[in-house]
Length: 208
Image: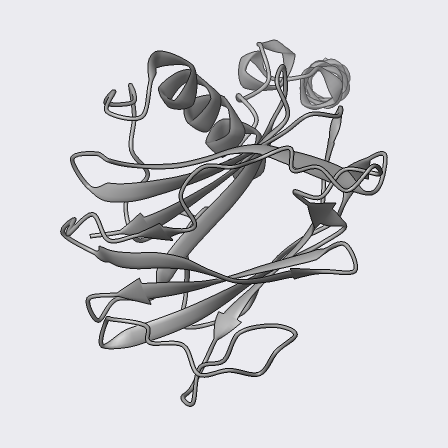
């Protein structure tokens, strides 16, 4: 009798071990895709205007911030795209740069450190860039020159807003569908970049 009871008890334990736990049958944890969350926050803040404060700002430890390294984004949509607006704004913890395009797409992006002498493209003439830390923004597949030679963007190409981190944003050149800018910063180099649609925008933040 004792032996039979032991066999039954062992069978019950085996069946119990095979059943999924309550935690495994519940709802999965939310996604931690930082790129998606950064795009969402960038879209919300940019839609509200350049001086709006986003609902959430990633901290320096979030994957969205890249410090001291090259920042790259692949091109999206058609190429080349034509610039229709460039603007800057400041927020509680970061300054923002926005490039807006006419087409449904954005250029390939490379942001990296730049060292003097700073020059204009393609002339090679000297260019003054303010700031203790200078980055170059390379937008491969973007231009403000339309097919007929007219300009799709006629706004400022030298911004000196005096923000907490963003000292100067000045266009280096727009040549053969490669648009380049120098970004003068007040020492820091933590960057995040995202693509926002409707309309197509490239949003670049520099952390305070």
